[in-house]
Image (cartoon, rainbow, N blue to C red; front, side, top):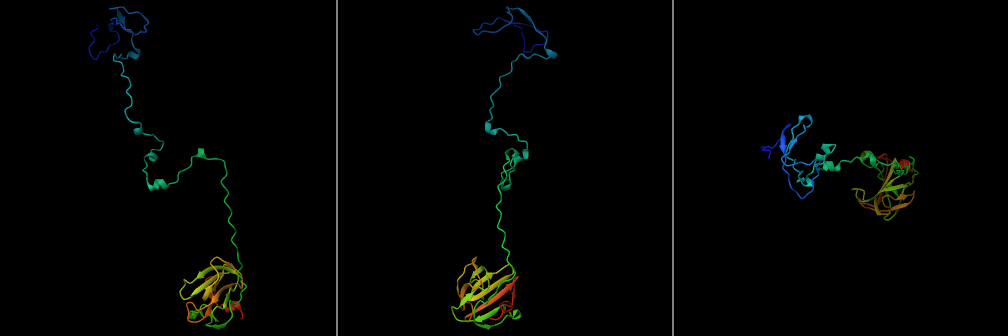
Length: 239
């Protein structure tokens, strides 16, 4: 009726006519419009152009939800690849999760036993002395000859730190730690009567005399001070 051509736009001041349209649906109007009646348009704010085409209804989002990008405050953290380094990195605990509960008390370790430097020595067995201490000639202790199965006793109180036969040249061997300075060594035994970690007393039977690792029945006895061989007779006195 108005002979408006594409793109079907009207401007401020244009006059348009409306034909009466019949419809079964109620239409809300403010003024009745008669057939072929002229209607004067009202200028838009800021002289903007009026667009006759109604906006198309919003189309539903076609992208699946799994493709949505999560925006983080720290983009590097989002882009970080799943690596062993990232996996092993410690995760900081958020402050909001912290509580006022005190950390569990760490159990106190037992104070180490401080042993005196002195040892109350005694002879480990009876017998004839052979091959006295001579470090220059490689004799790091003394040899005491005796009979097979003769008792071998601890020369002082302490703790067994070795009981076995893995050291070449010593046969079946017992080593006792007496304190932070002194060790005593008992070699070539027939039978070992104590185990590693066992606490023993002075004079306690620890082995029987034998000839393991040697050519005759004897006890090879050593005293070590701070890891160095010393002459046992200077500590044991007269047999």
